[in-house]
Image 1 (cartoon, rainbow, N blue to C red):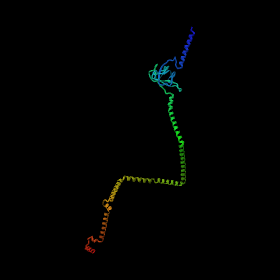
Image 2: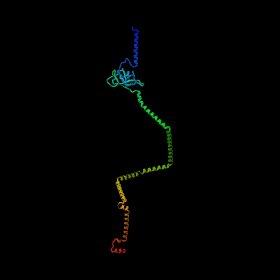
Image 3: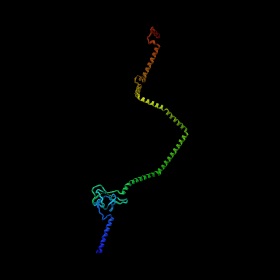
Image 4: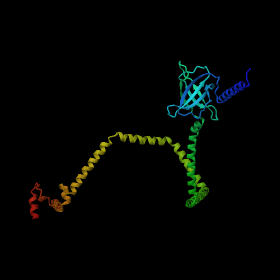
Length: 325
């Protein structure tokens, strides 16, 4: 017969075993669960802990059984995973830490790669950490934040400028400018009124001018053919002058003018007979005396031709000469 002490010992052992199993179960470990242990090494684990799920395409295939520092004292972190599913996992798969929900819970997702070699117990997978939701939000919000800061700075500068513009001397100058603008607008209104009054007073004259302009336009339209012929004739004359040897004529005229200028210059300088006659008074006087003497000679010949011409049939010349003597 079993003693009471033996029964009590068995009960204590069962209670201790049950307590140990319960504690491990609450931690995510199942003493009766079988599987293979694989590893992944990370520089940063984003706060992942034991008992977090290991998933493939969102389906749980195991749990994290341990998290600890690497024995090489490099500061890297080793995550030990217990895979309970018999789903084939290739050895070149990636163990990626990612967010399991919006509350910050983490999990390891196995990203399967194509390959013929399957993972075995104790293998270490390649690791990667997915960008957290907060980091994604920060990346999206950061440009907006920068733009908002720039906008606030611009608004602050604008407010300061407006404050300076609307205060003190600037405010007085602004009021003065506004007054001048109002005065200019008033003057413009007066000018408009004066123009309207002038138009009203001279409406008949303006009407007559408009009618005359219309008549002139009508006359030009009626005589368009004549005007076209006149313009065509002018164009023909221009073409004729352009085609004629006008250049040679102008060159000849220019040469003649240069020669005439040379002759005039020679006369002014006293060169040649004509120049000496113009510039030398003695030569002029001698020529003048010669002309006077010639005039007297011609007058004497006219009065007494017998003295100079021996033309007498009856010898009358001797008598006339003697009589003159």
